[in-house]
Length: 133
Image 1: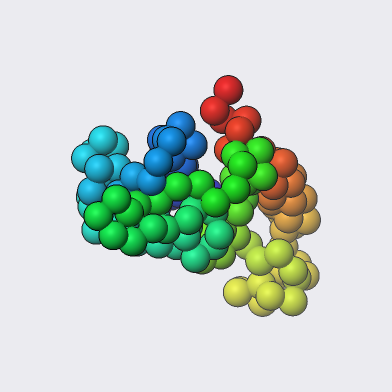
Image 2 (image 1 turned 60 degrees about the horizontal axis):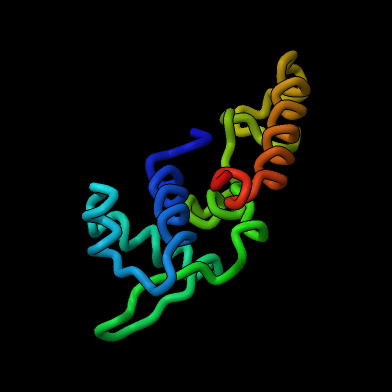
């Protein structure tokens, strides 16, 4: 589940917007990226609510980056779009939150939990600027 279609489209949109000198509307972005306009509009609104994009209304309105690309982590993008932190596995981050109530006897939970922690750290450190290079 780590990178869903919504996360992928969010990152692609942010790459385009990082190079823009003026706001781009969702229709132009959806056409340029060949993404469904309605799906992309929801993604862009989520990014605006998460203070990753700034939204402008009106004839010349659209979206532009709210912050510098080096200040936007992949973790923040994905969390904003998905509504929760991305997870590689269905395992809970805490033994007490295990959906099957078997975490205390699960032999692989400690490994999966450590792996998720490393992925979270990597995504928190990786910024939009890093993937623009």
